[in-house]
Length: 343
Image (cartoon, rainbow, N blue to C red):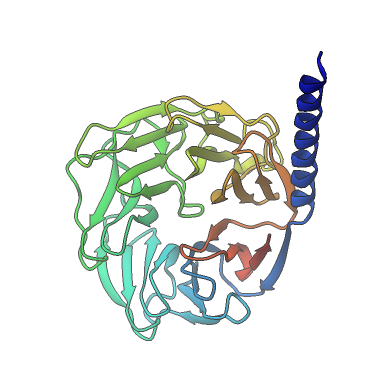
């Protein structure tokens, strides 16, 4: 080998070594700081607006807001809805937010005054309805996903910022025993106007609709299924990749097949070579090739787009979300627990 080629080879090895070293240092530097706990609510709804404003929602009608990046939280039980289980929240500012309740009645409430008052925008007392997740592509356009009724997933849509809701004609078909998980509000994602839904139970599928009103596409995910506790619980997209996580919440220490990724918009999937730490209920895109996941056994991070994961914290959380406009990353879980991830 001539000196020029040898020099290039040495430089390439040096660059690779530096990248590996920087990646290892990055993973070691991650810390999650607990900023709130000891509230009688299980938090599964989390919406981070910017580096100051975020909302959480949970069981027993609890909702809370921070306007200082998570240092202080103002809690309330929404009057008249103290038994509601608010599994998801979508916030647009410190004044405007929408909460979604699972169970009976199925509810969607909205505030425009920072939680001083709430108005019912959707109510359904049919016990067949169980709402799982909510997501908005912009301030006006949003969707709410519910478990299947008569082999069709419930899918509500709004075009006026949550003021009114309707059922679209084109809804995805569900196999017998297939459902979605109301674990973190992230089994449904809207990216621009594309819809991504992940499922569990008898099947672990990705259901996609990239053209409103068109036929839904189905991709099989390499995640365990066949039990009501198994399947895919969350999906995240960023930097040309899709990352999906899940597992079996009844065997939450099981580490095999808890995460997979796709580089072709969900057409094909690969299992993570090094999976997250057991069952994971939420995944979130952070930036570049970095994704965060969390679940009852703890939280993990990947810096290679889902190929390999490293455990960074052993605290149990249900949901993790990054600011829509900013860098703030929060996690939330049972007992009113809220944490801040420091990158």
